[in-house]
Length: 180
Image (cartoon, rainbow, N blue to C red; front, side):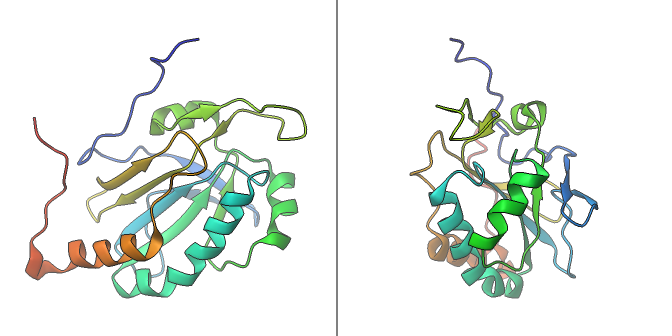
């Protein structure tokens, strides 16, 4: 087993030019903000097989308005197939875009941890463990959270509060973690 496959995105680096599909057939660039907003939060989730992901995505909807108030757009993405995403939708109560079809190569480019299914009942493909990236208006990673299991994710109220602090120009808050 190799433990050297990950290439983590560094704070301040350009977010990769990665696209994924939406159920309406559109292909969307993950880091491009929409809805008149300037920053983009990309939530990478494990897939429809993960009840913690379902809960987190539904909780994310509850802070979507606060994120929009501070100029942050949202998208969620997984390596699930179109059919798997469609089967997941009845358990989701969200109004932000959710994309599917993230490839292993794209997961590697993002530097996320990748797991193999424990059984065919879990899922039928390698999948990303949870990750969350906030990309600023220059296309750079301003916030990164990469986990190797479904139990560790940013607490959303704290994250939104922190992003509000970062986005406030009076605070002049830099990208953290850039010691060279």
